[in-house]
Structure formats: C-alpha cells, structure tokens
Image (cartoon, rainbow, N blue to C red):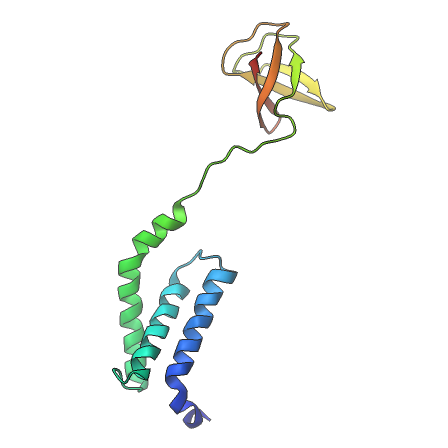
Length: 151
C-alpha cells in the first residue's frame, strides 16, 4: 500500500499542508500557530521535493519539515502574535443610551443613588456631581449601573 503512494509524496505533503492550514484558520480561528507553521512547512517541503531539490526519503521529509517549521516559528511568531493581539475597543450601544429622566437625589460617581427604570432598581453614577431635581441623560450602561450626564 505504501509503495503505491511513493510517487505521490510531494502532492500528499502539499495537500496535507493545505488541510492543516484550513483547520488552523477555519476551525481554530488562527488561535494557535503550530498547525500554521507545520502546514506551511509541509507545503514548502512538498514543493521542494516536487521540484527535485530535496530527495523523497522519510529522513529528508522529517528533517526539512522540522527545520522549516522552526525557522517559520522564529521569523513569524512575534509579528503574528502582534497581529492577533490587536483589537478594537468599541463602546456597545444599548437601548438605554439616551434615556432621560429627572433625578430625585443628588448623583455622584460613588453609585449611592438609585433609579427604578423598566422594573429594575439601577445604581446611578455620574463623572461630575449632579444636584437633585435636574434632568439627566444616560450615556453609558454597565451591569446594574446607569452612567448619566446633566442636560
């Protein structure tokens, strides 16, 4: 059985490398880089064997994959890690943003003031102190807390 696959070693390496790349990107979401490095090294090794640069022996295949994977990991680890770490902090817009009401108590950033809205007793906070009786508008919502500003 294995003897019948020997002429197709370069194609098998390239196909296996592409499958590993697809698993890394589609299933793992590019969270680990191990399959990425091994997949790329298998594609490169298969191409080098196909071009006749490397022999198609088991030793040369394993050694070339190990060396190419290590070189790719050394060269690409830092840039890929930086690319993976970039995320955009985006303020979530909720249905409560823009809601206006009159404060019955003075509001500060300690969260001692409460306001009942939509059947829930919310803590109300503000970056700057607001006197009782002023109209306020919700600018940000956290779990159990409405952040407001004076209008």
